[in-house]
Length: 323
Picture 1 (cartoon, rainbow, N blue to C red):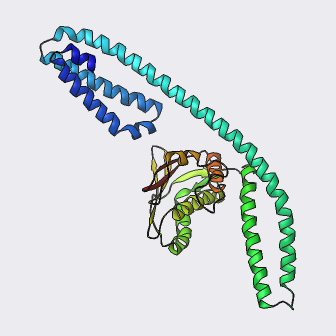
Picture 2 (picture 1 turned 30 degrees about the horizontal axis):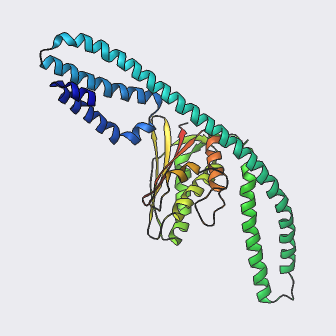
Protein backbone atom coordinates (compact mmCIF):
# COMPACT_ATOMS: atom_id res chain seq x y z
CA UNK A 1 0.00 0.00 0.00
CA UNK A 2 2.89 2.38 0.74
CA UNK A 3 4.44 1.77 -2.69
CA UNK A 4 1.05 2.23 -4.35
CA UNK A 5 0.59 5.51 -2.46
CA UNK A 6 3.99 6.75 -3.65
CA UNK A 7 3.03 5.90 -7.22
CA UNK A 8 -0.01 8.19 -6.87
CA UNK A 9 -2.97 8.37 -9.22
CA UNK A 10 -6.71 8.09 -8.70
CA UNK A 11 -6.54 4.33 -8.56
CA UNK A 12 -4.87 4.44 -5.16
CA UNK A 13 -8.09 5.35 -3.38
CA UNK A 14 -9.96 2.48 -5.05
CA UNK A 15 -7.25 0.02 -3.97
CA UNK A 16 -7.15 1.54 -0.48
CA UNK A 17 -10.91 1.19 0.07
CA UNK A 18 -10.90 -2.26 -1.54
CA UNK A 19 -8.11 -3.63 0.64
CA UNK A 20 -9.46 -1.95 3.78
CA UNK A 21 -12.83 -3.65 3.35
CA UNK A 22 -11.08 -6.98 2.70
CA UNK A 23 -8.98 -6.63 5.87
CA UNK A 24 -12.09 -5.75 7.88
CA UNK A 25 -13.91 -8.86 6.61
CA UNK A 26 -10.92 -11.11 7.35
CA UNK A 27 -10.47 -9.71 10.86
CA UNK A 28 -14.20 -9.94 11.63
CA UNK A 29 -14.42 -13.55 10.42
CA UNK A 30 -10.96 -14.62 11.62
CA UNK A 31 -12.14 -17.15 14.23
CA UNK A 32 -14.75 -18.62 11.91
CA UNK A 33 -12.25 -18.97 9.07
CA UNK A 34 -9.92 -20.98 11.35
CA UNK A 35 -12.68 -23.53 11.90
CA UNK A 36 -13.23 -24.02 8.15
CA UNK A 37 -12.08 -27.19 6.42
CA UNK A 38 -9.42 -26.89 3.72
CA UNK A 39 -11.98 -26.89 0.89
CA UNK A 40 -14.12 -24.21 2.54
CA UNK A 41 -11.06 -22.04 3.16
CA UNK A 42 -10.10 -22.23 -0.52
CA UNK A 43 -13.64 -21.30 -1.56
CA UNK A 44 -13.79 -18.39 0.91
CA UNK A 45 -10.39 -17.01 -0.13
CA UNK A 46 -11.38 -17.33 -3.80
CA UNK A 47 -14.65 -15.45 -3.26
CA UNK A 48 -12.89 -12.59 -1.45
CA UNK A 49 -10.12 -12.44 -4.06
CA UNK A 50 -12.41 -12.40 -7.10
CA UNK A 51 -14.72 -9.90 -5.41
CA UNK A 52 -11.73 -7.55 -5.15
CA UNK A 53 -10.82 -8.29 -8.75
CA UNK A 54 -14.35 -7.51 -9.91
CA UNK A 55 -14.26 -4.14 -8.16
CA UNK A 56 -10.95 -3.28 -9.85
CA UNK A 57 -12.26 -4.29 -13.29
CA UNK A 58 -15.48 -2.30 -12.83
CA UNK A 59 -13.36 0.69 -11.82
CA UNK A 60 -11.29 0.35 -15.01
CA UNK A 61 -14.45 0.20 -17.13
CA UNK A 62 -15.88 3.22 -15.34
CA UNK A 63 -12.66 5.14 -16.04
CA UNK A 64 -12.82 4.16 -19.74
CA UNK A 65 -9.66 2.07 -19.44
CA UNK A 66 -11.11 -1.13 -20.90
CA UNK A 67 -7.85 -1.81 -22.75
CA UNK A 68 -6.26 -2.85 -19.44
CA UNK A 69 -9.01 -5.32 -18.52
CA UNK A 70 -7.49 -8.28 -20.40
CA UNK A 71 -4.07 -7.66 -18.83
CA UNK A 72 -5.63 -7.37 -15.36
CA UNK A 73 -7.55 -10.64 -15.82
CA UNK A 74 -4.37 -12.50 -16.75
CA UNK A 75 -2.46 -10.86 -13.88
CA UNK A 76 -5.14 -11.65 -11.27
CA UNK A 77 -5.60 -15.21 -12.55
CA UNK A 78 -1.89 -15.92 -12.07
CA UNK A 79 -2.06 -14.22 -8.65
CA UNK A 80 -5.08 -16.36 -7.69
CA UNK A 81 -3.27 -19.57 -8.65
CA UNK A 82 -0.27 -18.56 -6.55
CA UNK A 83 -2.57 -17.64 -3.67
CA UNK A 84 -4.29 -21.05 -3.81
CA UNK A 85 -0.90 -22.77 -3.76
CA UNK A 86 0.15 -20.74 -0.69
CA UNK A 87 -3.08 -21.58 1.15
CA UNK A 88 -2.65 -25.30 0.33
CA UNK A 89 0.96 -25.28 1.53
CA UNK A 90 -0.01 -23.55 4.79
CA UNK A 91 -2.90 -25.99 5.36
CA UNK A 92 -0.67 -29.00 4.70
CA UNK A 93 1.96 -27.70 7.12
CA UNK A 94 -0.71 -27.13 9.78
CA UNK A 95 -2.08 -30.62 9.18
CA UNK A 96 1.38 -32.18 9.56
CA UNK A 97 1.97 -30.25 12.79
CA UNK A 98 -1.40 -31.42 14.15
CA UNK A 99 -0.64 -35.05 13.25
CA UNK A 100 2.80 -34.84 14.86
CA UNK A 101 1.35 -33.34 18.06
CA UNK A 102 -1.33 -36.06 18.16
CA UNK A 103 1.26 -38.81 17.77
CA UNK A 104 3.38 -37.31 20.55
CA UNK A 105 0.33 -36.97 22.79
CA UNK A 106 -0.81 -40.54 22.10
CA UNK A 107 2.67 -41.91 22.79
CA UNK A 108 2.88 -39.97 26.04
CA UNK A 109 -0.61 -41.08 27.02
CA UNK A 110 0.21 -44.73 26.36
CA UNK A 111 3.33 -44.65 28.55
CA UNK A 112 1.65 -42.75 31.39
CA UNK A 113 -1.52 -44.85 31.27
CA UNK A 114 0.40 -48.13 31.46
CA UNK A 115 2.42 -46.82 34.41
CA UNK A 116 -0.69 -45.52 36.17
CA UNK A 117 -2.54 -48.77 35.60
CA UNK A 118 0.29 -50.89 37.02
CA UNK A 119 0.59 -48.69 40.12
CA UNK A 120 -3.19 -48.54 40.59
CA UNK A 121 -3.43 -52.33 40.34
CA UNK A 122 -0.83 -52.82 43.06
CA UNK A 123 -2.56 -50.30 45.34
CA UNK A 124 -6.05 -51.72 44.84
CA UNK A 125 -5.20 -55.16 46.26
CA UNK A 126 -4.27 -53.97 49.81
CA UNK A 127 -7.19 -51.55 49.80
CA UNK A 128 -9.56 -54.45 49.13
CA UNK A 129 -8.12 -56.34 52.10
CA UNK A 130 -8.41 -53.32 54.38
CA UNK A 131 -12.01 -52.75 53.33
CA UNK A 132 -12.90 -56.38 54.02
CA UNK A 133 -11.46 -56.30 57.56
CA UNK A 134 -13.20 -52.99 58.31
CA UNK A 135 -16.53 -54.51 57.26
CA UNK A 136 -15.92 -57.48 59.56
CA UNK A 137 -15.08 -55.11 62.42
CA UNK A 138 -18.24 -53.08 61.84
CA UNK A 139 -20.33 -56.20 62.48
CA UNK A 140 -18.94 -56.52 66.01
CA UNK A 141 -21.51 -56.28 68.82
CA UNK A 142 -19.21 -54.62 71.34
CA UNK A 143 -18.45 -51.52 69.24
CA UNK A 144 -19.47 -48.08 70.42
CA UNK A 145 -21.57 -45.87 68.15
CA UNK A 146 -18.63 -43.52 67.74
CA UNK A 147 -16.42 -46.41 66.65
CA UNK A 148 -19.02 -47.57 64.09
CA UNK A 149 -19.17 -44.00 62.79
CA UNK A 150 -15.40 -43.92 62.37
CA UNK A 151 -15.46 -47.24 60.49
CA UNK A 152 -18.22 -45.92 58.22
CA UNK A 153 -16.14 -42.83 57.42
CA UNK A 154 -13.11 -45.01 56.68
CA UNK A 155 -15.19 -47.23 54.34
CA UNK A 156 -16.50 -44.18 52.48
CA UNK A 157 -12.98 -42.87 52.00
CA UNK A 158 -11.83 -46.27 50.78
CA UNK A 159 -14.68 -46.26 48.25
CA UNK A 160 -13.58 -42.82 47.09
CA UNK A 161 -10.00 -44.06 46.70
CA UNK A 162 -11.33 -47.08 44.79
CA UNK A 163 -13.18 -44.84 42.32
CA UNK A 164 -10.00 -42.86 41.68
CA UNK A 165 -8.04 -46.09 41.12
CA UNK A 166 -10.71 -47.27 38.67
CA UNK A 167 -10.21 -44.02 36.73
CA UNK A 168 -6.49 -44.71 36.49
CA UNK A 169 -7.16 -48.27 35.35
CA UNK A 170 -9.52 -46.93 32.67
CA UNK A 171 -6.60 -45.08 31.08
CA UNK A 172 -5.07 -48.35 29.95
CA UNK A 173 -8.28 -50.34 29.44
CA UNK A 174 -8.69 -51.22 25.75
CA UNK A 175 -12.07 -50.17 24.37
CA UNK A 176 -13.03 -53.37 22.60
CA UNK A 177 -16.80 -53.19 23.08
CA UNK A 178 -18.71 -53.18 19.83
CA UNK A 179 -20.47 -50.00 18.80
CA UNK A 180 -24.24 -50.12 18.35
CA UNK A 181 -26.93 -47.70 17.24
CA UNK A 182 -28.00 -45.49 20.13
CA UNK A 183 -30.55 -42.69 20.39
CA UNK A 184 -28.22 -39.91 21.47
CA UNK A 185 -31.17 -37.54 22.00
CA UNK A 186 -32.58 -39.83 24.70
CA UNK A 187 -29.17 -40.36 26.29
CA UNK A 188 -28.54 -36.61 26.54
CA UNK A 189 -32.03 -36.03 28.02
CA UNK A 190 -31.52 -38.77 30.63
CA UNK A 191 -28.09 -37.43 31.59
CA UNK A 192 -29.41 -33.86 31.91
CA UNK A 193 -32.20 -35.06 34.21
CA UNK A 194 -29.69 -37.10 36.20
CA UNK A 195 -27.37 -34.12 36.68
CA UNK A 196 -30.14 -31.69 37.69
CA UNK A 197 -30.12 -33.02 41.25
CA UNK A 198 -26.39 -32.29 41.48
CA UNK A 199 -26.81 -28.85 39.89
CA UNK A 200 -29.62 -27.95 42.30
CA UNK A 201 -27.28 -28.58 45.22
CA UNK A 202 -24.82 -26.13 43.65
CA UNK A 203 -27.68 -23.70 42.84
CA UNK A 204 -26.92 -24.02 39.12
CA UNK A 205 -29.63 -24.02 36.43
CA UNK A 206 -29.43 -26.46 33.51
CA UNK A 207 -31.20 -25.44 30.31
CA UNK A 208 -31.46 -27.80 27.34
CA UNK A 209 -32.51 -27.72 23.70
CA UNK A 210 -32.34 -31.26 22.33
CA UNK A 211 -33.41 -32.27 18.84
CA UNK A 212 -35.38 -35.52 18.85
CA UNK A 213 -34.51 -38.83 17.21
CA UNK A 214 -30.79 -38.38 16.60
CA UNK A 215 -28.79 -41.61 16.26
CA UNK A 216 -25.09 -42.39 16.37
CA UNK A 217 -22.96 -45.52 16.60
CA UNK A 218 -21.56 -45.74 20.09
CA UNK A 219 -21.80 -47.28 23.53
CA UNK A 220 -24.50 -46.13 25.97
CA UNK A 221 -22.45 -46.59 29.12
CA UNK A 222 -19.40 -44.82 27.74
CA UNK A 223 -21.52 -42.01 26.27
CA UNK A 224 -23.16 -41.44 29.65
CA UNK A 225 -19.73 -41.35 31.32
CA UNK A 226 -18.55 -38.67 28.88
CA UNK A 227 -21.64 -36.48 29.30
CA UNK A 228 -21.69 -36.76 33.10
CA UNK A 229 -18.01 -35.85 33.33
CA UNK A 230 -18.21 -32.77 31.08
CA UNK A 231 -21.50 -31.51 32.54
CA UNK A 232 -20.15 -32.00 36.08
CA UNK A 233 -17.02 -30.02 35.17
CA UNK A 234 -19.19 -27.23 33.77
CA UNK A 235 -21.28 -27.08 36.95
CA UNK A 236 -18.19 -26.98 39.16
CA UNK A 237 -16.65 -24.21 37.04
CA UNK A 238 -19.51 -21.79 37.83
CA UNK A 239 -20.42 -19.75 40.85
CA UNK A 240 -23.81 -19.92 42.54
CA UNK A 241 -26.61 -18.89 40.20
CA UNK A 242 -24.83 -19.89 37.01
CA UNK A 243 -26.53 -21.34 33.93
CA UNK A 244 -25.35 -24.42 32.04
CA UNK A 245 -26.82 -24.92 28.56
CA UNK A 246 -26.93 -28.17 26.60
CA UNK A 247 -27.72 -28.12 22.85
CA UNK A 248 -28.02 -31.22 20.67
CA UNK A 249 -28.65 -30.90 16.94
CA UNK A 250 -27.79 -32.32 13.51
CA UNK A 251 -26.24 -30.38 10.64
CA UNK A 252 -24.98 -31.83 7.33
CA UNK A 253 -24.84 -35.38 8.66
CA UNK A 254 -22.96 -34.38 11.82
CA UNK A 255 -24.56 -34.57 15.27
CA UNK A 256 -23.26 -31.95 17.69
CA UNK A 257 -23.61 -31.79 21.46
CA UNK A 258 -22.77 -28.37 22.89
CA UNK A 259 -22.26 -27.99 26.65
CA UNK A 260 -21.94 -24.31 27.54
CA UNK A 261 -21.20 -22.79 30.93
CA UNK A 262 -20.76 -19.18 32.00
CA UNK A 263 -18.07 -19.96 34.55
CA UNK A 264 -14.57 -18.65 35.06
CA UNK A 265 -13.32 -19.86 31.67
CA UNK A 266 -9.79 -20.84 30.67
CA UNK A 267 -6.83 -19.35 28.85
CA UNK A 268 -5.69 -20.68 25.45
CA UNK A 269 -2.75 -22.46 27.06
CA UNK A 270 -5.08 -24.18 29.54
CA UNK A 271 -7.45 -25.26 26.77
CA UNK A 272 -4.55 -26.70 24.80
CA UNK A 273 -3.55 -28.90 27.76
CA UNK A 274 -7.05 -30.35 28.28
CA UNK A 275 -7.03 -34.12 27.88
CA UNK A 276 -3.41 -34.41 28.97
CA UNK A 277 -3.08 -37.08 31.69
CA UNK A 278 -3.16 -35.65 35.23
CA UNK A 279 -3.70 -32.06 34.04
CA UNK A 280 -6.55 -30.33 35.86
CA UNK A 281 -7.70 -26.80 36.65
CA UNK A 282 -9.65 -27.95 39.74
CA UNK A 283 -8.19 -27.93 43.24
CA UNK A 284 -9.34 -31.47 44.02
CA UNK A 285 -9.25 -32.90 40.50
CA UNK A 286 -7.12 -35.85 39.42
CA UNK A 287 -6.74 -34.84 35.77
CA UNK A 288 -8.01 -38.22 34.60
CA UNK A 289 -11.70 -37.64 33.85
CA UNK A 290 -11.27 -35.56 30.69
CA UNK A 291 -8.46 -37.78 29.45
CA UNK A 292 -10.77 -40.79 29.62
CA UNK A 293 -13.64 -38.80 28.07
CA UNK A 294 -11.50 -37.73 25.11
CA UNK A 295 -10.39 -41.35 24.63
CA UNK A 296 -13.99 -42.59 24.65
CA UNK A 297 -15.09 -39.94 22.15
CA UNK A 298 -12.30 -40.91 19.76
CA UNK A 299 -13.15 -44.60 20.20
CA UNK A 300 -16.71 -43.80 19.05
CA UNK A 301 -15.37 -42.03 15.92
CA UNK A 302 -16.15 -38.59 17.33
CA UNK A 303 -14.20 -35.44 18.01
CA UNK A 304 -14.32 -32.72 20.65
CA UNK A 305 -13.44 -29.03 20.45
CA UNK A 306 -13.20 -26.57 23.31
CA UNK A 307 -13.66 -22.82 23.15
CA UNK A 308 -13.11 -20.77 26.28
CA UNK A 309 -12.49 -17.22 27.39
CA UNK A 310 -11.43 -16.18 30.91
CA UNK A 311 -14.31 -14.61 32.79
CA UNK A 312 -16.93 -15.56 30.19
CA UNK A 313 -17.16 -19.34 30.19
CA UNK A 314 -16.41 -22.47 28.22
CA UNK A 315 -18.09 -24.37 25.37
CA UNK A 316 -17.45 -28.08 24.81
CA UNK A 317 -18.61 -29.27 21.38
CA UNK A 318 -18.77 -33.04 20.85
CA UNK A 319 -19.42 -34.18 17.27
CA UNK A 320 -20.31 -37.62 15.89
CA UNK A 321 -21.22 -38.77 12.39
CA UNK A 322 -24.95 -39.39 12.12
CA UNK A 323 -25.96 -43.06 11.93
